[in-house]
Length: 416
Figure 1 (tube, helix red, strand yellow):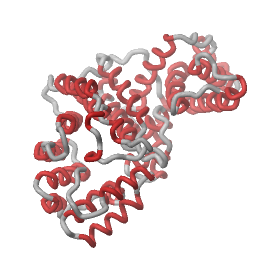
Figure 2: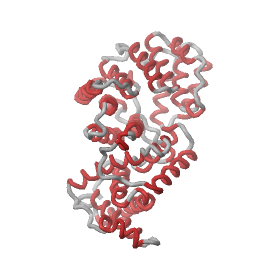
Figure 3: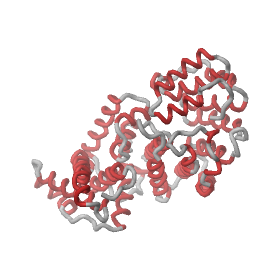
Figure 4: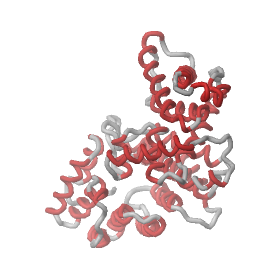
C-alpha cells in the first residue's frame, strides 16, 4: 500500500465525525463516532490487499456514511429517523473531488462551534472538541488540561449527553449564538497547536501536523464574518510566529533542541513576516486578549538575533501583563524565567516566593524543570537536584527528557 501522510487516519476521523454529524444531527453523535471508527478499521483491513483508493478521503466518507445509514435503519423507531433524515442520509455521497474537501473543511469549523456550546461547561467543551475532532486520546487531554483521566471521561460524558439531548448543526454561522462561542473555539485551536508545538505524546516531542491543522482552521475562522475579530487575528499571528521556528526545534535524529541550540537561519522568514502582518492586523480593536500578549512575546523571539540579544525585559513585562489578562501560575513561572535572563536567576526565584500552584500544575514536569533551572543557577544545588529529578521523572517522552538533562546538567548560565 502506498504510504499515507503521517497521522492520516487521525485527521480523517475528525473530518468524518464533522461531516456525518451535519448530515445526521448531533443527537446521533454516538452513532456517528461508531460509523467513523468502523470506516477507519475497514480501511486498515482492506487497503493493504486492494491498494490505496484514488481518493482515500472520499472512500472513507462513503464507507462511513453507508455504515451510519445502515445503523440508523436498524434502530428501534428507524422509520421515524428515516422520515426525519432520510433524504440526506440515503443520498449518494459526494463525488471524490475538491468539493468534498471544501465541505469537510466547513464541517470541521461548524462542529467546533457546536462543541463550544455555552450551555456545556468550558472544560467539557474542550474535552469534546479535542477528543472528537482533533483525535486526542484521554491521556493527552488530561496532560494538557492539568487534570486526571477519570475527570476527562466525566467531562466527555457530560458534553455528549448535552448534545444528544438537543444538539443540532445549523447551516450558517452568522448568528449571535455562534459569536458567543468564539472564545471557546479559540481555546480549542490554541490547545491543538500547543500539543503540536510541545507534545505530551509518549513518542513525539513535536507534531507539526497538529500545528498545521490548527493554523489552517484559524485562517478559515479569520476569513469568516463571525471569526473576523482582533483576537482571532492575534491567534493566527501567534501560530505563524511559532510555526516559523518549528523545524529548527528538532535535530536530525528527532531530538528536541533548546532555544540556544537552534540555528536561527532555519527559521522561516516568510512565516515570520506573515505573523507580524497578522499581529498588526490584530491591533485594530480596543480589546486585549491573551493571544495578543503571547503573539507579542513570540515576535520578540523571532526578531532577536540570539538568546543574549533577546529583549528579555520586554518579555518579562509581557508575562506580567499576561498574568493580569489571563491569570495562571504558569504565566508567573515564565515571567520568572524571563527575569532570570534579564537580571539574574535569584531575581527570578524571588518572583516565585509565596506562590503555591495548584497540585495539578505543581506536579507537572515544566514547573519542576523551571524551579530546577533557577535553583541550580542560583547555587541552591540541593533544591535544584530535587526539582531536576522530579522534572526528569515527569517528562512525557525521551526527547523532552534528553533536552531537560542538557538544560539542567550544571549550574551555569544557559539560554532557554
